[in-house]
Image (cartoon, rainbow, N blue to C red; front, top):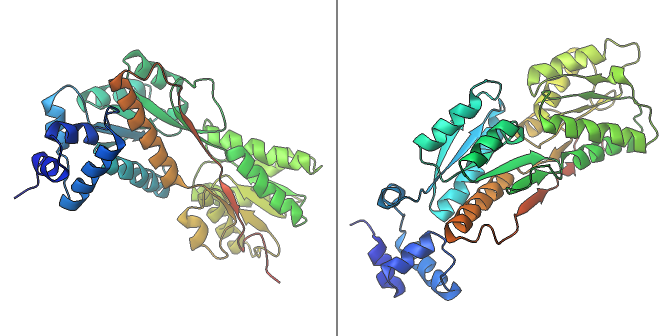
Length: 344
C-alpha cells in the first residue's frame, strides 16, 4: 500500500492538515511540529503527490528553469542543483530551453509559464539579464529569481544570486603576473553576456593594478566554445609578439586554446600559461589540467531555487511586501593547476 498523508499524520501525532502545512512550507507551524512531521515523512518515505496538490486548488507546486546556454556541463549542474531544492521542498521542475536571440522569446516564456501553471521561474544568463523578460513577468506577477554575474544590478526588487566573476578574473590574472607574465592574452565569451564583460573588466583591472599596459591586440573576441579557443590562440600567435599567458573566459575556451597550442608545438606551461573559468570537467580532463576559478554551479542553482520557493511561500502568506528582498553572493575561488604553474 502506498503511504498517504494520513499515515504521516498518524505517526507524527498531528492532523493531516498540519502535515499539509509543513509540506507546503507555511510559516504558521511550530519548529517542534515541523521536526516531528519531517521525521515521520523520512521514516515512511512519503512522497507528496504534486499533481494532486495542483489540482486541489489554485496553488501551483511546479517551478520552471529556462535557459539558453550551449555548455552541457553548465546546464546539467544547473538542473541538478535546482532539482535538489525542488525534491526537498515538494516541488516539480519543468525545464525549458529557448533561443534568447529570438524576437518572440518573451512571449514564448509567458505562454510556457501559463500553460504549465508555474509558481515561479529560475532565470540564468542571458535571460536573467534581459529587461523585456523581467518586465513581462512583473506585469503578471510571476515570481522569479535571477542568477547574475556581478555584485549588483539596477533591478533588485526580486531576489538575485550574484556571482562575483570580476573579482575571480582579477585573481587569475594576478596569479599569472606573480609568475612573471607581462604579455597576457584574453579570449572572450559571447558578447551580450554580462559574465563576459565582468571577466573582461577583471582582466583589465588586474593588468592596471600590476602596472602592465593594456594592449588591444592581446584581446580576442570569441564565444563560449572549444572552437573559439582554437581560433583565439591561432590569432594571438599570428602576432610578432605573442603572449606568454592566456586567460580564457571559460574552461571550454581554455581547452580549445590548449589543444591549439599542442598542435602548434607550444609547450604548456613552460612556453605558455593558460587559465580558464568555472572549474567545469573541461578543466580536469585536459593535460595539463587547467588553472581556473571554481564556480559551484550546482550550489548556485540550488540556492536560486531555494530563494524562489521561499519567495513563493512569502507571497502566499502575505509577508512578501513586509520583508526585505533576499540576495545571495558567490565568490569563485582560484584553483591553481599545472597549466600555469610548473612544479619544481
